[in-house]
Length: 424
Image (cartoon, rainbow, N blue to C red; front, side):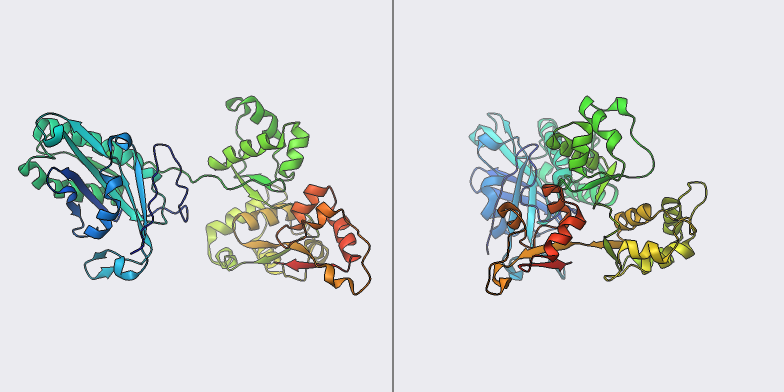
C-alpha cells in the first residue's frame, strides 16, 4: 500500500486537492492514545471502514505530539490498488484514496495515565474532494467532547465510550442529509454543528480575460473599497483585464485581485474577447435550450436588443445551431439580419459561452523554423514574440501582450511560412 500524507493547518488551503467538488462524509471515527497500546481507534461508523494498516500509517498525525495539537490536521492517503481500499458491506470503494480531517485535542489532568487524555474525532472523505467546509465542524465537536469528558467521562469511561458509536452515527447521518447536527448525551447541553459551504478559490485571471456581470444587477459602489470603485464602472462585458487596467488607471495586478474577489462572490464570470472574426461551435448542452422552458425564457430575455421585447427562441436556437468551424460570427451576421430578429449578437455569444451552450474555437500559432524550405525566411516578429508561438498561447493572449490586432497578427502569420496555426 502506497501512502502519501500531507498536513493542513488552520486556515490553510488544500494544496493537493484534485478538484473543487464536495462529497459526503464517508466515515467518522473516534481515536485515543491508550497508555498501554498507544494510538488506536476506539470506535467508528461505519464499522471497520478504516483498517488498522491505514490508521497505523498516519497515527502520528491523528494522535500527534503537543506542537500540532489543537490544530486542524488533514491527512491525504493515496491507495495504490483496490485491495487497499476500505470496504463497506458488499460495496467496495474506488481505489482512489482517503482524506482524513481531524482536530487532535488533549485534556491535561493528573487522573489520567501520563497526566493527559489525548484524543481525536476525524471525518473521512474521498481524497479528491474539498474538506475545508468540515474544519469548523471537527473543531467544535472536539471542544464539545472535552466539555462532556469533564462532566460525564464520556471519552475515558467505559460507560461513556459505549455511547460514542451512537454519537458518531447521528453526527454522520445528520451532517450528510441536512448539513447540520444536534448532539446531546443523556440530556446534556446540546451542541449544534453546521456545515458552512465555502465557495472554491476563484480561477486564475489572465490579462486577456473579459469579466461579465452575472445578471443585470450591478453592485453599489459605496459598498466597495476605493480601488474597486475605480475598476467596477469599466466592467461592461467588453473590455479585457489589461484594457480595464488602462481605463481605470489602476495597476493590472490590482485589477486582477478585484476581479478575483468579484468571482469569489459570484458577481462576475470570465469570457473571451468578442470579435466578429471569432469562430464558435455548439456543445452537447445546446439540447437543453431545445427542451428546457426556463432556459429558453432566460436566453430570450438576455439576447434581446430591447429589454422590453424578448427575442424568439424560434430565431435564437437556429442561430446557435448555425455556428460551425467554417463560419465566423461575421458570416453569421451577414447571413441573418440580427436587427430584424431582435437579437444582440454580443449578448447571444456571451450567454451561450457562460451557459456552456457554445464554445470558442481558439487559434494557437506554432513556430516551426524547419518549414523555411532552404532559404531562411525574413523575420516578421521579434524573438520574444516567436517564443509565444508554441501552441500554448492563443491569439487573444498574444494580441494583448503585443498590442497587435487580430487582423494584423493574421496578416503577418499569413506571410510567414514558418508558422502554422492550430484551431481547437
